[in-house]
Image (cartoon, rainbow, N blue to C red; front, side, top):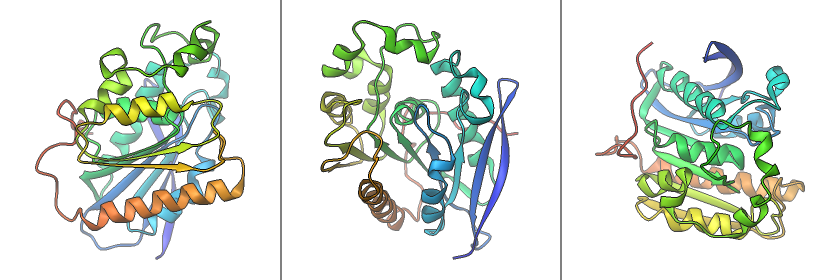
Amino acid sequence: MSLRDEAVDISVDGHGIEGTLVLPERSSESGPAVLFVHGWGGNQEQYLARARAVAGLGCVCLTFDLRGHQRTRTQYDAVTREQNLSDVVAAYDLLARRPGVDGSRIALVGSSYGAYLGAIATSLRPVRWLSLRAPAIYKDAEWDRPKRELHRDPDFIEFRLRTHRPSENRALQACADFRGDVLIVESCDDRIVPHAVVASYVAALTNARSLTYRAIEGADHGLSAEQWKQAYGVLVMTWLAEMLAGASAPMAETAHAGARQPAES
């Protein structure tokens, strides 16, 4: 399938963040789309190859740089979770408004901090399919504190070693309310996001229409070995292909009861 990249500038809070649309060649009718959200310290370049592979399934794909990364690196020490969540929502809105995108068939694929933000974003926008790799977790308190400073909490490591209920955490509550299809991928040798965190996400997703859990044996948090990257890529591609095959018609209900449609531009 012929693909085309298009650089886009995403406006958020009076600023601009960089993104890249990967556009498949397809008929004029609307089709599915996928939003990729990178982790803390990452960037959209790390996801472009995967976005191009997924676009081969006929999906419009969007990668972008969260504030505090790449062009806005000067904000790295000051950017907050609220600001980065606004980045995700703004990217979603740009994608949903794109001609040729069916707003009822949008997937969000996030890793680590991006997976955490993506989970929360499902409470703000109608996401149909949600893929979370090594989803991070943070305390709800000090929401406006710079994200970089959250790791200075003396309880931070112990917090991630405990399991948590949805009522105790915004991201987990969003997962509990989510009614779409979900893929969760865990790295078996993850020293950043322990098993207890992934287990909390899995336990929260009781209302999901379907839940697929996979673990990559021996993999670390960042998938530093090529074989782990490839294994993850196969998991995402296989799952998305399965979801798309059964999604020719819109869902009867929005995937999240509290999600809002993006405003018209």
